[in-house]
Structure formats: C-alpha cells, structure tokens
Image (cartoon, rainbow, N blue to C red; front, side, top):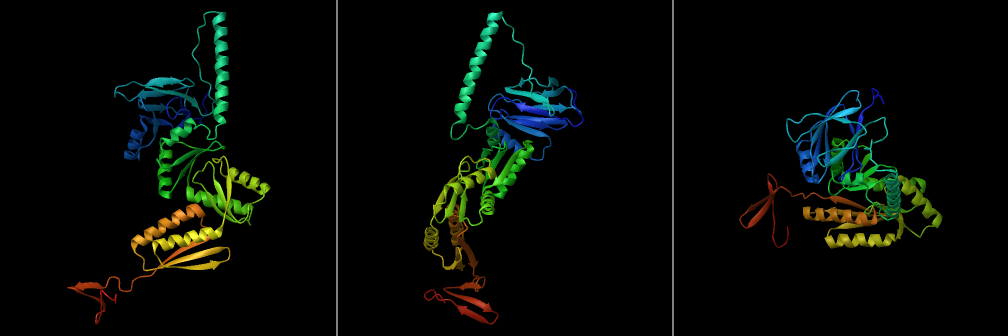
Length: 381
C-alpha cells in the first residue's frame, strides 16, 4: 500500500506493562526510552523540555532506541539501538512484529489496519497440520471462555493500556477505562491535573481525559439537576468512581426515577459501572456540622434559609484554627455535600496587631504617636 502525504506511522507495544499501547510517531527522529517506571519518571522530570521522546515501561531487558521516519513514510522505518554509540540503523518492515532488547514492537501506517505477517510454519505432513489446527481451535475456545469469565468479574480486568498509563501518572491518580474507549485519570487538584497532562503529552498518549474529582462531582450534580430540577441532590460521591453514590435528601424515590437517574449518570460518566442512591436526613448533617465547629472551639452563627443552613464563622482566628476549620469543612463536604450546609469564614482583624512592644515586665501598645495602652496579664486589657 502506498503511503499518502498525510500518512504517518503508528508503533504498537506487545509485551510488558504497556502491552497494547499505541503511539503515533512524528516525522523525523523520535527517541524511545525503555526501562523500569521509576527510572523513566526520573528521566522525564530531568528532561521535561525534550522534543520527540517516548517512554515505555519495561521491568527487565529494556533497550532504548531511536526511530527515523521518512516523509512520507515508506514500507519500513529505520531503528537504531542506543546501547552503543556506533550501533547501525536497522530496516524494520511495516506489519512485522520484532524484538529490540526484550521489547516486542510492530509498526504500521496510520491509514492501515493491523495485519501482522506471521512466520511460515513448516508442517511435517497432513497429520501435523490437522493436529496443529485442532490445538489452535482448543486454545481459541479456552481463551474465549477465560475472556468471558474475566469480563463477568465485578471490577473487569485492568487493561494493558490502563496499566501502562498507571505506570506513568502520579501515584495518587486513579486511572479508569470508559465504555467510550477513552481512558480517564482522576486527580485531586488542578496542580496534579496539569502535571499529569504534561506527562501524557510527552508520551503522545491521546484519547486520555484528566479530570479533577471535585470538578467532576459538580459537573455530574449539575447534569442531573438539569434533567430533574426538583431533585434534592446533596452530593455525587466519587470516592469510588467505578460505583458513584448519589446522595439525596427527603424520602426514597420511585424505582422508575432511580433507573432513569442511573442511566443518565452512567451515560455522563462512562468510567462508572453502577450507581448507588442513598437518602440522608438534612437535620443530621446540620447537627454534625455544628458539633464539629464546637469541637474546634471557634465562634459561629447559624442562619436558617430556604432549603439551606448557613454557618458563619467569624472572629480573630489563629492560623491553627483556620487550618483545622478548612480540614473539617473539606471532610464534611466529602461526606455530606455542600448544597445544604453552607460555611463562610469572616476574619476580624486585630486592631492592635503590629503595635505591640514589650518593655521589661510591663508591656504596652502604642496606638498613636501620643497614646499608649497598657496590657494587664491578669485582666487582658
């Protein structure tokens, strides 16, 4: 098949943690680093500005190499191992699976489907051919049975591409495979999302979506509210994204509405396989919020509103108190949501801050150029 002007080349990995992963190669030279995931992560951080570089995880037998792609690509690519500086370029035909080090690879044009050329099998007669065919059929049936059994497992076996991406992204990220054939990487912060997007771009891994969990929760909540405006949604819990939990307030919903909500959420979140719906008591969530603030020991005011309760925290708060409040609010909203109990923090500046000066055992505060306020350690003023 003749390559067109818009054709490029696709490389596929056949073994190791990234087995099944495909990379679209750029014209010209591409450096491919092969090795253990931790070593590749170090190399990626040390040389973040490198151009056309790919990283392939392989625990043992890794051999880095360079690919030279002509424009337009022909019926082969040029590959050169980097074990020795004097290594010669090797001609690697398309649609042939070969080995470089312990890594098995093949190349094809982007306009082609995979049609790997298998080595010819020398048969020792019709009986040998027949036996080989019988064995092949038996193996195929066994593989089919095993595949069906594995697919029926609740967690669905982790795909090779999913394992490969998991080896590249941050340790805290969760990598999920969607029914739309996309990969989803869920992270906890925008900073983590930016870092992981850069890693995936350097490895030229497309069809991967990096999303922040909190943003994804709000998106799904808004999506369901558009479909059911009167629904008392409190939270879409994504702590286990394969089985999200929709938390509602009020009374249990009808089975028909339950089925509709599950269908809509699974359509909006292709990585999820099941939706659980729970009903919570808003009064319990308010009691928990008040008890938590009292335990921290900060002043607050309660304001009951229509379909909501506002807790206003105010005062001259210490840094340790602010940190404790923010941790509590974060943990509370992960469990109860942020749609019914609303927190606000109003800091009151200390009017004497920055004016203190100690002189011996008696401290005084200079309010202005002509006035001082003495502080009593017993009365506090």
